[in-house]
Figure 1 (tube, chains in turn green, orange):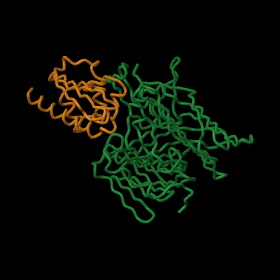
Figure 2 (cartoon, rainbow over the protein chains, first blue to last red):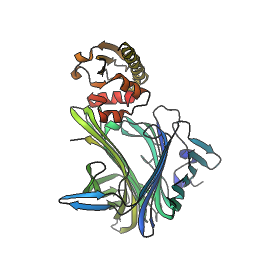
Figure 3 (cartoon, rainbow over the protein chains, first blue to last red):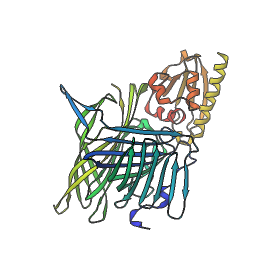
Length: 353
Length: 117
């Protein structure tokens, strides 16, 4: 077993089973080019998910993100190709088998075969068939940096998360059309002991996969029960050539461009600038939305009044991204980063007004 | 009406049980939340002790309740609370449709969320 990966077979299994109100999620995402078109394919297996149900889902969207300008407003256009497959299952539907070096997870027609550092995911739905191999490009990134660290995102939200940045190969057959998948992607496994959504105001989980490095940068801005702000951040960078895992000591994220997203009736950011500091140097990159936001979850809570503010909105989505940037070493050497892509998982909870 | 009142009584007992089960989480808070059933004009005022358990459960007409009397107030009908507790009603959807109204301070919402969200 390659211990450099910082992950064990045990970490692939369903977690917290039997704990009331827990969530356990496996997530796969890949950016790839097929027929000169960029695609983002994402799959999840939740046992149970945030909606308290066992569910499986898959979704594919083609880029680029279409934008149209109407007077002073830039608005997103619905993608020309976007297919979704989503199925809910009964409470006892998730099955797991383990042997010496494999964990096999089954939910309906989705199967995930996990080994240390590689994952084979298969989906066999009528119009959505997937057969993909995810191979870790290097060590996994644990939220909080230590394996199995329980992260307190807000006072009422405790969870463990791991991310493997992967090379991805395989096929997807969508509505009968077979596509070869070859790209960089992400395996995520998160188990949540408890979550207090209304303590969040803003979260970005930024995953960027360059040829030369990969990075997870996560920030959460929340509110404590006494109304005071609560901040949580974690991040790491892995340099491929040096095989160096670098916890991020400080990072900043600023938004550069916004566009109106009709589905959530809101302006949402479509371009960001990120700076992340480590002991070996500084990562600076810009990322832009490369496709239409995916897995949009939205709620208008018009009859919720918190601290005398009436009407709240909940928005969560995955934003496929393209990234460009550099890593500047302490001695001033600049590493130009190439072929950057990834995803920004976004959560926003704010007043409706 | 009598049947609904009986159901409301049972639902509040369930809420009290749930709050008592997470008493360790609510330890040191010592404030009150209230439930107002708009369809039967009945309300319940639940005061938590400093050890996190429910020390007082007072019933009174909903029309006499004021949101200022507690840190958090939940306004709904009996069927909606029953649906939320037996998981046939999504509380977030209910909030969007006005079937459920919650008014209060952030800390009260955090105490209420584990039992009704």
